[in-house]
Length: 302
Image 1: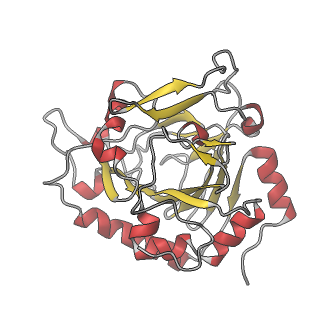
Image 2: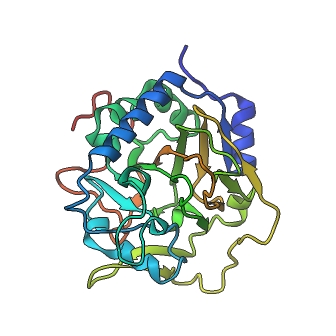
Image 3: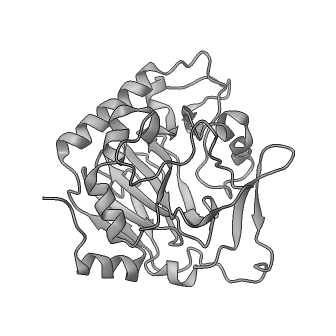
């Protein structure tokens, strides 16, 4: 039987801005995707890697400037590997094996890897997105594995996804699939329930600078707009493999560092409504060779 959201699940998602769906996909599927991710980690060429790191959000300080390098900005139609800052020593060399030193793999897994592609365009995923009101040719964007490696997995500060994936009107929604158990000890997601209602307006955006690189800019007219921050009660959302967490584009969420002996590997992608305008200065841009694919495409190809 194909997956369908219940009315109670729809209501909870609308109320909280996020929803944990337990056992959304078979454990065997989670194990297969986890195996594929681990194979990619083992096989990537460290010798030719430029050393690009990834820091959780754009408010992370000077280290976040790497987000503007070409290796990052040109990754929308590629499979690339971004290192965990805490896994790099003072001499610039890794302090642990490479497969335990990667923050994430992105950003075109859903198109370039056959296992992730088959999963991302599955009937259950399509039915879920339809049930959430996406009907006008939704597009799949930014597909990636976030590794959160044991002992060094970095904190992701409080943010909303529409700051980084902006459409007009705002339509971004995240689908976050647990390939391993996510717990408070290894950095599960935490949310401010209902913050998507108070945070509906896009006030800041991560954009490409004309001369290269990226910057976080205030949207004109939003200078005095209130922004929900982490000053209220939050809710940890532990999720086990193979659960799915739905994330509204405006809900405020974060995850803590992973200092535990267990990794927290997940697969995630976002979808946007195809009828909405994708802003041409967003950091992520489609290419002529790989436009954002339709999620309802019956036979996406590489």
